Image 1 (tube, helix red, strand yellow):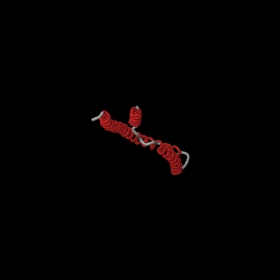
Image 2 (cartoon, rainbow, N blue to C red):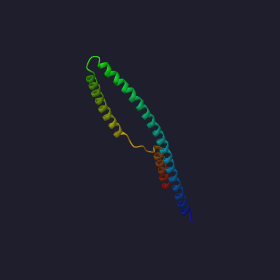
Image 3 (tube, rainbow, N blue to C red):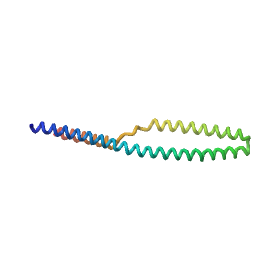
Image 4 (spheres, rainbow, N blue to C red):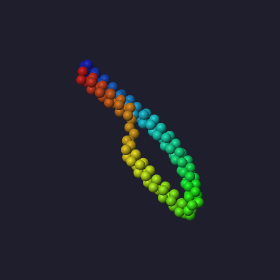
Length: 126
């Protein structure tokens, strides 16, 4: 086997190993990000539940306060309309934020692969 054939054979083995290592790194990175995202989502859910009950108590207090100066049904109607307007504004802002979000990508792995490609190109030119 000539030196060139040996180099090509070695390059093939090394590239295969490199691709497998990069895929393993990407899988590990995405797994870690997924675990963090899952924990964060669970905590957001718990916070949302607590905030819902707290907000419901405050809404009842505002309705009862307004009921001192107007009929209770009018007080409940006013508070309900205000809450629906706030919900609409928050929903639109949230929709815009979700649309601007980028999908999760293994950034470190992509940078590593690009560096590997650049190094292989550089060595190939020698």
